[in-house]
Length: 386
Image (cartoon, rainbow, N blue to C red; front, side):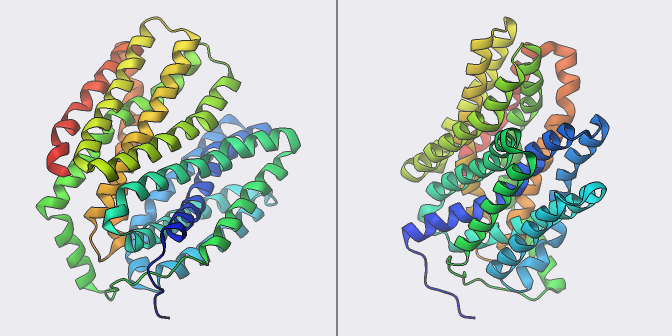
C-alpha cells in the first residue's frame, strides 16, 4: 500500500499521543498496577518481586528490531501488536496461576511494539519539529503510565480490581483506534540479510553515533543512580503510602509530563545544545536538593524534592529523545532507535544496581551528592553531542 501524505500538525499531535499511550499503558500496568493488584489478591512478596522483574523482558526488543524494520511496515506491526496485547491483558485477569506466563509474553510483545512505534514516529516527524514532538512524546508516555498505573490502582481500589484493569485495557484499545487514522510512513526497507547487520554495525561504530551513545549514558547516569534510592528515602523519611502513591504514580507523572512539554518547546525554540546543557544542570540540581533534604528530612521538604525531581526529569528527557531521533537517520529507524534506548535501559539498571550499595556506604545525603557529581561528565559532553 502506498504511503499517505505527510501529516498536518494537528494530525501529527493526535497520532503522537495515540502511539505513546499505546506504548506507555502496558508498561504502567506492569510496573505499578500488577504488583499492587497481585499483593492485594494474596500473592506472596517473593512472587510480586518476580512479577516486577518481567519488565526486563522489554529489553529483548533489540533482538526483534531487525525483523520489524525489514518485514511489513510500522503501522501494520503497531496495530497488530496493540490488538494482541489488549487481548492478552484481558486474558490475564482470567488466567489465575497462568497470569505470570501471559504477562511475560506481554512484556516481550510490548518491547517489539515499542520498536514499531518508535520507527513510525522517527519516520514521520520532520526535523524542525523533533524537539517539540519529543516533549509531547515523553508527556503522553508518562500520562499513559499514570493511567495504567496509579489511575488504574485508584479505580481498582474503589470499584474492584477487574474494573480498574478493564479501564486501562479500554484506553489501550481507544489509542489503537486513533492510530488507524495516522498515516503510513514512507521509509527505506532493506532486506533482512547480512548487509542489514553490516550497515547497522557500520552506523553504530561511526564516531558521531558513539559520541551520542556515550553522551546518552553519561547524561542520565546521575539521575538513574539516584532514582531507586529516592523511593526508599521517601519511605525512610516518613511519607505515608498514600503520599508515596500520589507523588510517585500520579503527581510525579503529571510533573514529568509538564516538564517534557516545557523541555521540548524550549529545545525547538532555542536549540538542542542550550536545552541539553540547561536541563542537564537542572537534573544535577535536583540531586543536590535531595542531598540537602536528606541531612534533616522533613515531610514537606521531601515532597518538594520529589516534585522538583519529577519536573526536571521531564525537562531533560525531551531534548535527549530529540537528539536520539535525529541520530538514527532515515534508515533502520526502529532498530537504531532500539539500540540507543537499550543503552539507556542499561544505564537505569546499572544505576539501580549500584545505588543500594552506595547509599548504604555513604548515607542518603552522601549518595545524592555523589550522583550529582556523576552528572558532570554528561554536561561537559553536551555541546559536542548536540
